[in-house]
Image 1 (cartoon, rainbow, N blue to C red):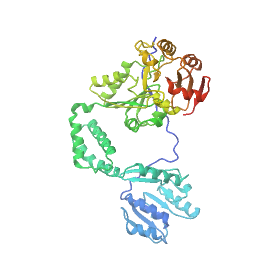
Image 2 (cartoon, helix red, strand yellow):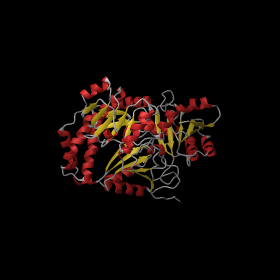
Image 3 (cartoon, helix red, strand yellow):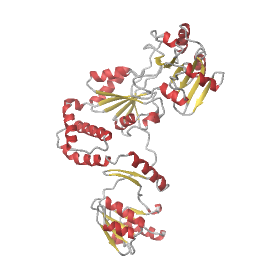
Amino acid sequence: MDLIRTPSETRSGKMAPLARLPVFLALEGKRAVIAGGTAAAAWKVELLSAAGARVEVYAETPSDELLQVAGDPPRGAIAVQRRGWTADDLKGAAVAIGAFEDDDASAAFAAAARDLGVPVNVIDKPAFCDFAFGAIVNRSPLVIGISTDGAAPVFAQAIRAKLEALLPKGFADWAAAAAHWRVALKASGLPFLGRRKFWQLFTAHAIRNPDGEPAQNDFERFVAEVQGLGSAVENGSVILVGAGPGDPELLTLRAVRALQSADVILFDDLVSRDVLDFARREARKMLVGKTGFGPSCKQDDINALMVSLAKQGKRVVRLKGGDPLIFGRAAEEIAACRAANIAVDVVPGITAAQGAASRLGIPLTDRNHARRLQYVTGHAHDGALPADLDWQSLADPATTTAIYMPVRTLAALVEKATAEGLDPQTPALAIANATRANQAVVSAPIRELPALLAQAALRGPVLVMMGRVFGEYAGAKSSAPRADQKAG
């Protein structure tokens, strides 16, 4: 009897402790006070001016660097007062920055600012800081701040350099265009979901063409495309996403983008929870578990839920272990979406056989041993061994075969295949939790593998692969069958 369960929502884990709360201050036209005239102070003056603040500097002997910045401010005006600071100077300031050598002067400045309710930072003295400056990646209005809570500024700078290399400079132009077009979009008459579709089109285009210059015809084209959808724009969409065999680093970039833009994620038991860490935190995560011979949601219920959420205007990610198009029942879910006039897309993933082979370092189509690779399922709709398997292809010694969902039917499959000509000494592997930290491998000739697999009682998703390409792996391990634990 099938064990039926209903979809259930999985709460996101609690936010891990934060050393600092990242906050972006709006300083345009506001007063910012700097006490001290060092070169380090000059850099903070430049940052504050670039953010649009009116910067007032109090320093008896301002450095040449500071005077140079004040003479040519990046944005907000900079006024330099050649005297020490007073408490009255801090009144009405949005922020206060101090540059002092000794702790007594730092403490006095911090206390005066706090008495007036002004957030304070004393350069290189965390004990006197209400906030910290991080390393900055500037693609304004796209801005990224990086903080190590003062523990490793050099490390933060190295991360900044990495991000600088990854983020095209053209993103600044697209972010600026977004700010400019936002008002025009509201006046376009598009409904809320239409405007959201506009931003999805905008984002996809900007990511594909980061160095292209945004133009008015881009705006008009996106609006026209949304208008062309008519009432269909009120619908959301469904994306079938392959989560891969388990290691989250095997996710494709497109899969990560889908997870980070999803409103709702419907995922299976076989999906590694580490993969969900890439999802947008605000997304609802619902377990629609399907496990072989275990509690499972009905496929019709999953289809209905998926369509219902999309009709509410949600971006739905149907997250499946491995590749959704390989034994993932994608055909039924795609058909359900098309029947309901819901836009559906597929993001392929690395299937278990590929992931396992890569982790073991075994080419599945080594030309010295195999001329063909085939994927077969170990059970039919009723859970029994499929009656329509091509037994001659299974017996072909020049074929590498990956058997999915094999645990209950492997003994019957091996018995039938050997009767049809499969060499019982064909090297074979059973891999559980492929690519994960708890990956386990049982290696044996195919005729011995069913008994060893039952004895090992491997937990998690199991894949069986057989063929001559695995002979070297089995020989390298030992001449006797064994189970191995392999780190992910």
